[in-house]
Length: 300
Image 1 (tube, rainbow, N blue to C red):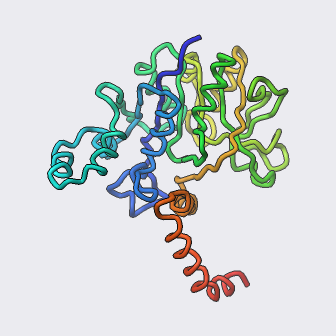
Image 2: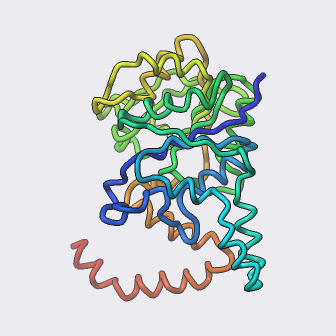
Image 3: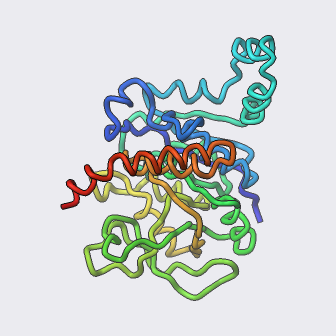
């Protein structure tokens, strides 16, 4: 069985829901507490044993490449000022030489097209796909558990979570078959099903392990929903030849592609941090007390 060594991160999106903040700063570089969103996702992949990080970028995304590069002046300044702890932390987050690759998605044709743009860098081997808008919070990373399931099956893996059944029409939904290993067989995949028609309330949360045969399907994939090349459509075709397994992730997922999810992630990760959570808990309680009259008026 071929090891999952590479991960693809589609980071070409414009982030229009965060304007004007994202006019000059990529949405992936917005910070949750004290780390950019993209750093959380790369850290998750690294914990899962990923060795090569592939970023599918667009225009005005050069700062992402700079973030994962060595900054000699900064490192030297920190060393001279005796800030060894900060320097050590930065160096621990720094990928080794040759571990990062960047390719362009010149035309915004959707997630499926972004994945296809990474084909030459991935080559003929399985790969992880992590959507940077979605960041996870759990003791053990979602991708690490998915890699363990892949090592049991050797097939395609999709991470899912439960949503309110009334909200299923907003997501990509899978059908749940019999249990297998530490996951289950996927029987269906539907992108934003019509209300009342979803096969389950298990939504795809932005983490995948895919076989390289997906690239040949994406190469000739017709445009689907939103006039874009949809990854789900390509996975449905691949499922005719290969098995797909679902991994039911039990941790927290935050959609940092929306302002509400981004703010929620900041609160949750601040409370997760032992060095600042007590102070932040007091601040949050104080704000809730202060704004309670306004919240009551808005609710009623």
